[in-house]
Image (cartoon, rainbow, N blue to C red):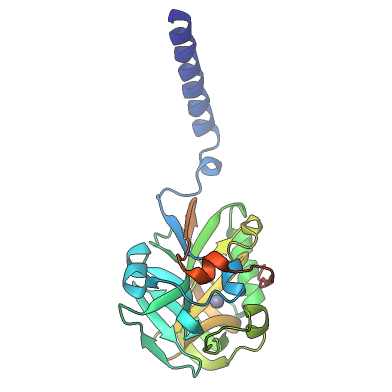
Amino acid sequence: MKVKLTLFAVILLLLNSCDNTSTTSTPAEQTLSKSDDTFYHYSIWWAFVNKVFDGTLTAKELKTKGDIGLGSYNALDGELVMLDNVPYKVTEDGVVSVAKDDELIVYANAVHFTPEQSFTVDSTVHHQGLRDAINSQLKSKNVFYAFKIHGEFSAIKLGGLHKQQKPYETGLDVLIPNRPVFEGENVTGTIVGFFCPEYIGNIGVANYHFHFISDDKKLGGHVMELTGKNLKVEVDPIHKYTFELPQTPEFINGKFDKEFQYNNK
Ligand SMILES: [Zn+2]
């Protein structure tokens, strides 16, 4: 027993000394995030792609998971953008409203946003230019990030989804390329979004996923294209990830055979 205890003490000492050495030599690389934020994910992308279009998460519950978020409502009856803990709903006709507390959600990402890095993109950029600017600032592509990006958009093209009727026959691999499109000019607003590393696979949307809500709350949706300037980008690195599966027969019995990913690197 004595030997074991001594060994234990030596290991503890070694661990401590390792810790001290690494902390003093490379503090910035050791910790990307000071906070304890958790990436909350309702359902999985692969189920959503494969016609699991109903969930049991309410808008009221989502508000406890974070203050920013994105996703879709049941039966694809609206794209979800949550900003300042208010979940907005953008229906297929482009109309924006605030979701009622009992509104059901099929797919969502959310986080309690605590930005730890910010920078501005002053010059005019398109969607890829914005992603390139963010790519150049991220310290690692192996962790998760949440973003809030506010600025002026001389043009923005946003996608919605057509509301579906049961039994659901068409998956997102077909519905997304044929989605309704809402276009705005000279609007100010906020992009809310997330970055997931490629290793997320079919669980989530790999790389960037951005939704938008205008300052006047009249325009919103999934960001497809943009021309913007004076963009303030706030970044929250996230090291914890949790997902919650819908406890529905459609999820339990679903056949997840189709694959679809955006190409938002
Ligand atoms: Zn989206």
